[in-house]
Image (tube, rainbow, N blue to C red; front, top):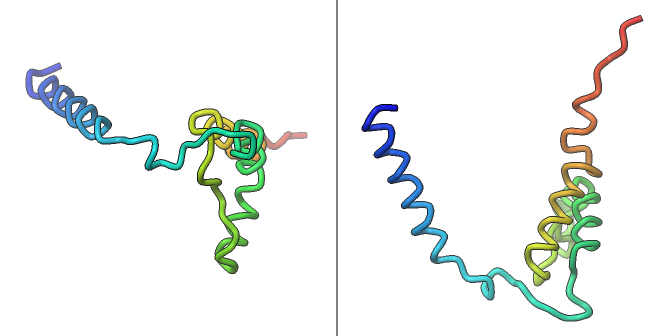
Amino acid sequence: MTKRTITTVIAAVGLTLLLSACANQIDAGVAHGADVPGFWWGLWHGFIFPWAWIGSLFDSDIAVYAVPNEGGWYDFGFFLGVTVLGGGSFFGSKKARRG
C-alpha cells in the first residue's frame, strides 16, 4: 500500500467514526415494553417486505418497517426475514439442472 492509500483509509475511518458519534438511539425509535416489536416481528416484517412495499405505494397506512421497535434485535430479525425468508439471495442462487 502506498502512503496516500493509507492516509485515505485512515481519513475515511475517522470520518465514519465522527459521523457515527452523532447517532442517537432515542431518536431512532428504540423502545422497550411488551407491545414493542422485537426479533420475531422483525423476522415477519422482513419476510413480508416485498408485499408490504408494494402495498405502501398505494396506501399510506402500510409501513414496511415498525417504529418504534426494540432496536438491534428487531433489525436482525428484519435482516434475516428479507435475506433468507424473503428470497434475498436464496432464490437467485439456484442453478438450473442440465439434463
